Length: 201
Image 1 (spheres, rainbow, N blue to C red):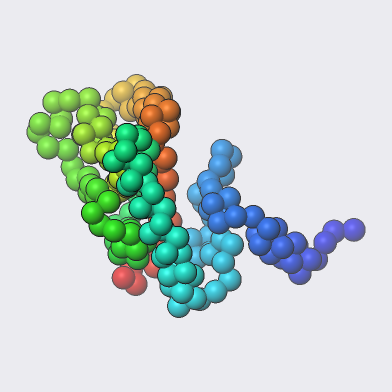
Image 2 (image 1 turned 120 degrees about the vertical axis):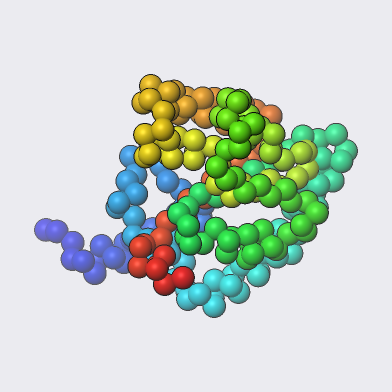
């Protein structure tokens, strides 16, 4: 006998409460973006004001962790954090900068907003400008857009042959694996909002 919608919903709710935020938000192999409701709030039942309170509750913890990261970088450590934020225009990238990155000491943050490549950048391999913007030891680097644009944009607008952009997937994977080996913690955030939400901004 099949379970009712109510049973399925309660099971899903219990499951979501048992996992961490990072697990609830993680996009894994086999997931499809079209299956994800852009209005959903994984692992969170509150309203917008509740979200602001929950975020503020982490303020002291984030301060302490950033201070330790910064001190580690000044005493010979190589640990760094790279926060990569992707999303369409008006998807909320600016909100992350204000509400999340704004919780930490700005002196410990290196922000890079990637635009269309300059003439100089076009003369180099596509990861050249990304490597130049990587955070120093003890710092939090924030990329507003990133190396993923160098696959996405060229593919959508047919700017380079398929063989060229297809190779970039492997190049990016190897690049990120190298960063992880070099004590860089990479946090990737993809802002997924509906067209209705975009128009409301």
